[in-house]
Image (cartoon, rainbow, N blue to C red; front, side, top):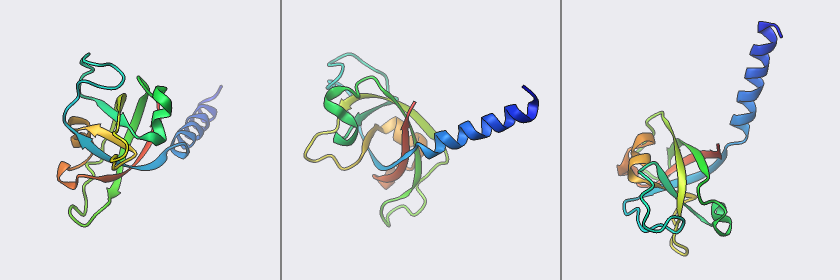
Amino acid sequence: MNMRAIIMVCMAASLISMASAIAGTATYYTVYVPSACYGYQDQGVMIAAASDAIWNNGAACGKMYRVTCTGPTNQGVPQPCRGNGVTVKIVDRCPSPGCQSTIDLSQEAFSMIADPAAGKINIEYNQV
């Protein structure tokens, strides 16, 4: 395969991965154990709780998601995004009713992609 063909394949692959991203919202939480998936086992801090949209009767446990901030959801912090993406592991279920987002990130994961003062942000996410 020549270099031009390799570049074209890489470009097509990156477009496919971007096209598969799903729009949603993210919030954050701070108490990580116990979790619905792992009980009292510590799973680190790059974790998240899934809303009903992702939970799938617990099938989401252990799945990895790439989450990127795309913008604010309110007037409080006009530019909350930090330009980074983060990969998190689903370890819990966002309480229903009461879940305020598509994915509830650990405070550490949220802080990597956005200003925590925003509280809630618009995101794109996809399973990795």
